[in-house]
Length: 210
Image (cartoon, rainbow, N blue to C red; front, top):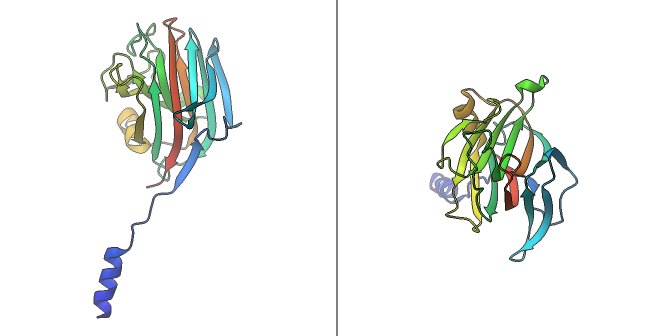
């Protein structure tokens, strides 16, 4: 009987849930931990209401400016990055395969810093303009930034899409080895190379344990 009860307990007991590490859900505004990184011009980032929820809106016009959230973590302990986003439209002339087209209405970075800056690496999760979904390639300007198209095209514009990525698996695919310590998460909507305009919304960025 004891053995039977023990087996029933193990069968019925809920599985341990994954822990989460919130980056930002913007419910109390933009966290002061976000730092601006200006490359060219200024993208406007502000917290707005969207269907009763507070989200981050980005408006970019011939500009390249990101927001960086410094957060050291071991990807093997916190391998899952999730967020949701939407775009107003893709960028005419945008093409991840060319320097002139290296613009995206929305992208999320995971940054892996190195004491020697030229060896700093990053995964760029992009909403691609033309690159097919799931395609990956080096950034047009540097091989240390790898681009991964998690969404592509304008078919789902105006729609909130939830993304969930395994950072460890993606890093292995992109760089051929296990990831080092990560140092930051970044957001950027940029339009400097094409001179176009773009609007995107971001929300619920968080890391999850296994």
